[in-house]
Image (cartoon, rainbow, N blue to C red; front, side):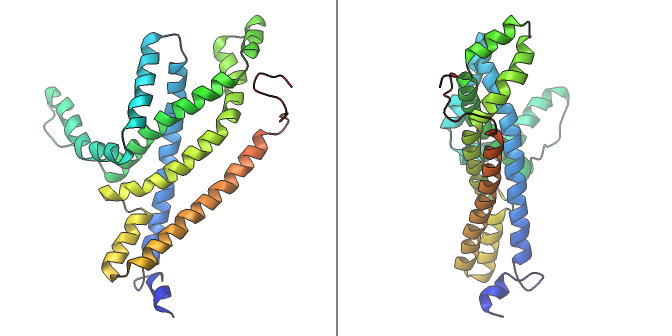
Length: 244
């Protein structure tokens, strides 16, 4: 067996197990961060489009602030300062212990916060692209605003927002590498540990590159299937306003 293959062998003789574990951790963190961020982003977009001034200002400020601050800074602040902040809030209620924020929870929360900030604008653009005439027609038929939004506006907005959400997913997938800075044993962290132990970094970091390319390739397959499914029965020559 060649020396490079020995490095990536499974079991006690190689680092294949650690890299596979890191790959699984990367996928899990990306899925959780993206899921929570998209849900929060949809709620934020609804707030930003609402007639409530306070809700609009909150969603707008959230979107601006967390798109402006670097992701690594948010991850660091949440991981190193989150436990102190929570303990300070609970101390007036008699809590005297220490709140421990695990690296994974801190990382998922931080990435979800940033994802939500971008998802707000993606969903906002998708919702505004739906023809207002469809809402007016639903209201004229006596359909409530809530039902109109979830059954008429939202499905179309999701189709329009899909390309932006897919790009956001790929960004989240790559940003999981930032969590290695706080000790999350993701794909990059596993490669770093292997490179430090063997003093041979090139094979390990090359494997990381191959791993992210593989995950991106799988993601593009799923994205293509989703786009094909959402385009069924849709006239590509019809613009957003419904005019041909």
